[in-house]
Image 1 (cartoon, rainbow, N blue to C red):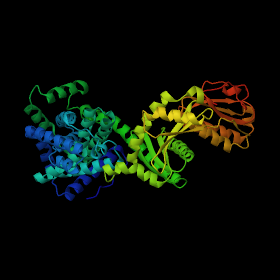
Image 2: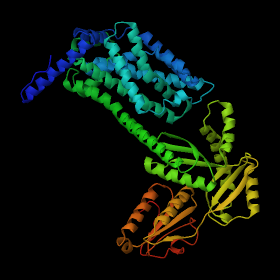
Image 3: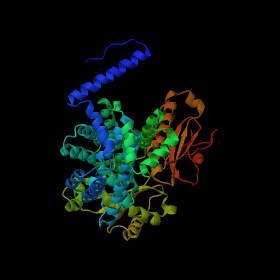
Image 4: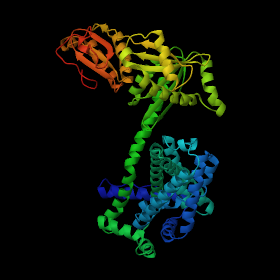
Length: 584
């Protein structure tokens, strides 16, 4: 049977579409070895038998939640899979999709109530179990369900097809269990992770798992509804069965009250407005978080590709090992570099600038210099002894704690008045396991005794045997003509990174006046490049002005004399100094 041709009138086009629909329905029914009357039987069973097995449903749901939560906390994939085998979530979710297709307010509202109750039970139960557990470690099984990807949505699509197909072909309990397990794979673990996140008070975990839950739920319902429509379920008349099911439910029950409330808003449940508006309201409820989730997933996919490309390119320039994560709208990079502190600072600045430009967010980049790969291995070895597969990134956890301790100690011990503000610092290990603290500051070179005194003050709060090395920053003015700005732009880029990392340093920037800029395309391009660089270094203190005929830049302590306009090479001009973030 093939769809016949028709005239071009509106009624002819509509008739052609309906005949094409019937052709598609017939082909799919034959492919699945189904009869048209089986559609009515399936819908009638959903409406008539809904109250049967209520105790079993909630019992199996509770057991599935308990097993899944414990399996996630134990980091046991086998236990999590076991929870899927007893998950009963297939029923209400498939009925929800069917209710949208056949236009049954009773089926849609009833399944919505049960889905909502199921979510509350699983989330609340998982949170309570988490509270009573003696350990609350974020295991790999939990972490895997806090950052949804496009692969998770692809899995949900496959799950939905499995559930919908086994629903219309439910000739045995085996099929029903298979579809229930399929739904459980995509929904039960993320629901339990939402409860785990609430139980430990970590909203990032809860939000990430909730995003995965909403994404999977929408994919399952949408694919299921399309599948039922292609099989022709929208042709099933449910009015009499709706009335029969509603009459069988308690008069003052939740379904009755919900339908009465909806009828007051949309009119009779027999009206076309009710049939269209009800699914629209329900789907809009998940459309907003779904859109946000898809945008987040898309950003993470693009950013991961960009960070991988940037690190691959940087590895061709420097010899280092890196670990990195992209999650929750943030980018974190931890790197061990075989080389000097200066090379580490340069690499950190380049990575931060490139990743910020590619991702649109300010990344957290840390580069730790090491004298050799042997030193890196020694730094990681104690952690590997605790776990055979501990990655190099695990060593960063101890270093991160040490950095926090040092930052706190430095805040109270660094003599700003004597040696100027700190522009940054880094740790370097030698081949013998000694640790050296390299301080970059904007001030005079301290004498040899200053390093020993500062190390003694810091040792009591951090680590023994700490050595301190001072690295004063160059505060000389860098000047360039309108035809030679490449080196000057490099100085501006480095100065921005220094100013971004320190609240006590200001970058003074002067560009030529408007008349000079108007006469040079290269000069205008340089100014645009400065604006672009400033956008990649949010928080950097910059004073920028237009004056004279050359480009100049210089670092100076914030609030100190002389001011930017009084520094050598930064003569007064017609425009006053401007703060970072304003036009230049």
